[in-house]
Image (cartoon, rainbow, N blue to C red; front, side, top):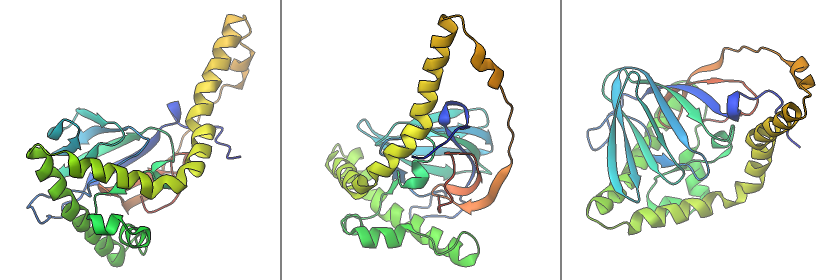
Length: 247
């Protein structure tokens, strides 16, 4: 059983992102479009300007981003971070650790998504840093844009079929990971919520003895400038928040 005794508040994942400045085939600079299957994600903008493009049941949307703005999107929403001038974001991720454990699927073309081995090869990075990793991250982004553009075009034309098919394919691609995700969820987000329930029970019974265990914690980034899905990523080695995968 995984033990995550001191997660961040609410057992959220935390990272900082600087959106990629690489120009894609459609002339837009930014990250790799993808979706999450079970995690809601939030962007808290700390500097610069840009946007997040989303694909959902209501169609295509572009949400402007500037310092102080917050945007969030639920599972199944395809999202693409767009760079328009030194965009910097703090990311809050539901269900600590699940995205790093595979709860994210790129919008690669259907023929790549249909082959798990081919998908894994395209999604992975050969290293955590250096020119080879940067080149692979850029190829990965460009392949995701190749699959994203037809999804967006179909939605804008009133046809949700390709988007729905992408969701179904993504769900099948990660289905084998569910037992690992469930273990992480039980040890992190669920355990945190249940701990609050026990504290409420204790308070209601007039027994605040658990307050004797009060502690304070601090940390600093454990990795700077990694190649994430949306941009260069600073992350924290906090239980449940970072699993040292390629992001």
